[in-house]
Amino acid sequence: MNNWKQQKLGIVADVKLSNVDKLTIENERVVRLCNYTDVYKNSFINNEKSKSFMLASCNENEYEKFILKKGQVAITKDSETPNDIGVSTYISEDFEDVVLGYHLALITPDNDKLNGQFLHYWLNTKQAKRYFENNAGGSGQRCTLVLDCIKSTPLYLPKLSTQAKIAKVLSDLDNKIELNNRINRELETMAKTLYDYWFVQFDFPNEQSKPYKSSGGKMVYNAELKREIPEGWVVKKLNDTLRIVRGASPRPIDDYMAESGCPWIKISDATAINHWFIIGTKEYIKEEGVKSSRELQPGTLILSNSASPGIPKIVQIRACVHDGWLIVDSYKNGLYNEFMLFYFENFRSKIINMGSGSIFKNLKTEYIKDLNIAIPPIHLLEKSKVAFDNIYKQVLTNAIQNQQLTELRDWLLPMLMNGQVTVKEAEESLSMAAEPSVEYKKG
Image (tube, rainbow, N blue to C red; front, side):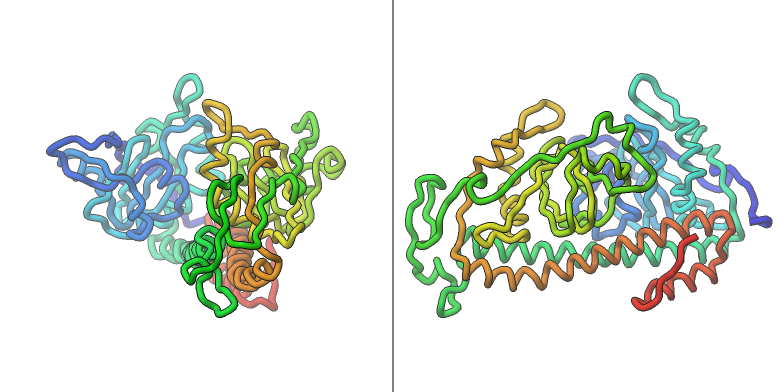
């Protein structure tokens, strides 16, 4: 790092604060809007991700200033907490109809001095995050990065070719993570479709391997569900077929937080990207706090019960769980975890409507226990478990690999940015991580 040059961001890049709102105004250009959450949750923006962006409109001047182009970086500039400002995403493709929205800043690097991908990763270092937190303005509960503050962001820059090599090492990891996420989304869609086909539409394969209901399978009306269900199925309250208990938090919780110890599952983990699973946590509690919480073993099904209620997760680690979660013991009547996970996903809209609270939705445990469930015969549950297991195992394998890749990326990032690890050494670490039989050592 001795030959790296210190430079302010505004000297090597153009910075603009977007003012494009979410409105659609007649006679303006219709565009897709890259919003705050689109930047916050994505390490890069490409055409695939932009398909879900909302429609809005902008005038021609706004379009020219904030159309997204390959090589740019967007960051969050406003938030309620300092940790959420300066969060960056890299624009990996050129766009003709996607502009950057309000509460965000668009950074266009000077291509002769600064690599956009390198800048994105630099902004993810602790040094950059600390700078934003220490220099954020705002009043009340709002934190803001003003234009001059963003332009004054300190950078340490190697020569442009080295910037590109460092960015490639880190982006290769992000690309693999994104590929696994895309595969998992497709597998999850496949599993949900299978569940819907078998257990909502009741077209599971009959004895002749034909769809049951569509082939004239006998249906009987059920008063509790107010609909017909296949003959031989039974309807019960969840409380009569499952054991459901609330998680628990040691008090006062701050006295039990630790850098290491027992993984601590908070309600914020409900929206983690590990799809169906929780395979790691950001926070831990001391071992002496375990007895005042609820300790879970791998394979436990839990359901979020506050803030973002109705999200099921299967825990793949030993952990303790916050009281914003419900613990579901589903091994009765053959109701295996995956079946119940899809059941809760299918009923989530109903579960959300059962909640109370104007800002955060909260559920009473009794509401969940009182839900009805149509239970298929055991032979059908066993048959469906075989079909779901193949998908489940693939998703879990990809999720675990992503956890490992994320840890490797997060370890390499500061090491590359402060010169402790060279690009060659980083590439060797990537080669070792790619071999299942070889462990790479962090630190």
